[in-house]
Amino acid sequence: NPENYLTMINGQLTDDSARLKAGDRLKLVAVISGGSHAA
Image (cartoon, rainbow, N blue to C red):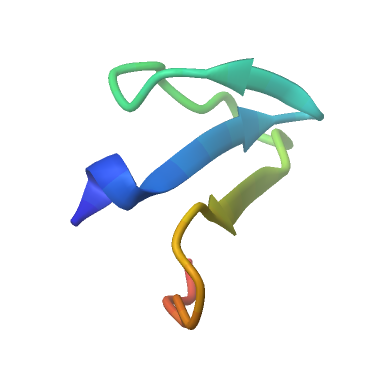
C-alpha cells in the first residue's frame, strides 16, 4: 500500500503523484515497522 510509504525525491518529501525526472533518486521510506518493499 503506497500510503504506508513516504516518497522522497532527492531528499525532498513529495507525494505519490509526483513524477520522476531522469536522474532523480527515488527513495521509499517505510512508515510502518517491518515494511520491506523495494522500488
